[in-house]
Amino acid sequence: MAQHDIEVSNAWARGTVPAQKVSGAYLEIRSAAASRLVGTSSPVASQVKIHNMMMDGNVMKMFPVDAVALPAGKTVKFAPGGYHIMLMGLKQQLKKGETIPITLRIEGADKKIREVEVKVEVRDLALPATSHNH
Ligand SMILES: [Cu+2]
Image 1 (cartoon, rainbow, N blue to C red):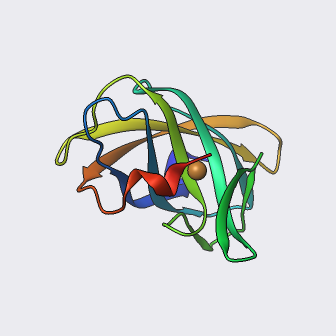
Image 2 (image 1 turned 30 degrees about the vertical axis):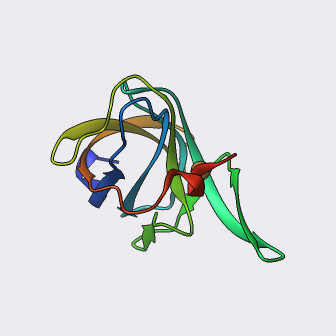
């Protein structure tokens, strides 16, 4: 697969206040061929994980997932309330208007993994940090 077979759009991360160590990033991925997102990393955080959210009774809970299927030609959305990229152990404040790099590890049908670097725009603090308690 060529690099352009993966399209990433609407990539953004939640801004943080000083000393905040956790944030979330969201994006939309479309892969021309069936593949899987199997990992994420970024120089701005010591741990970068794929998470999903689910209702447990009346409580929204988030949990880590190992991989996210990217069906051929379908746009998979990472958005608040669902899949997200969890940035933990932030090494810097995420300020609105800045751009941070996140690397996506994508495994093709041939089991080969390649890395796609995404520029992620930091947006305003939209939700309180309590939504990221683990
Ligand atoms: Cu999370």
